Image (cartoon, rainbow, N blue to C red; front, side, top):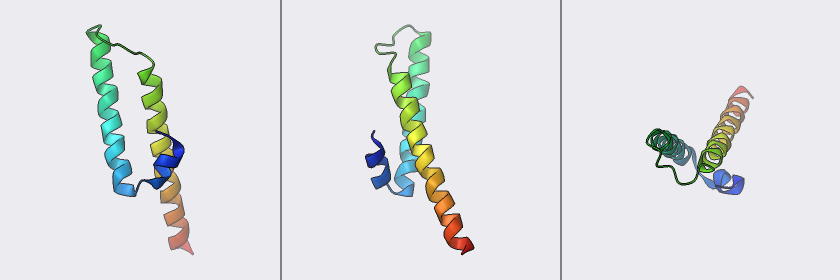
Length: 70
């Protein structure tokens, strides 16, 4: 997921996507335990996607706080 795609999402979609990504990380960890992981690089990709989503969520929260403070 690219940053441009994250910017297009609304707040609810970001939360849904974060939950989906967190579930993916959990599933990958389970695959590591059972030695059935096919692509270990997925961890890095998913962690970065989660970081992008959380960053956008924080930026929007700060913008809302700034707008309400003015």
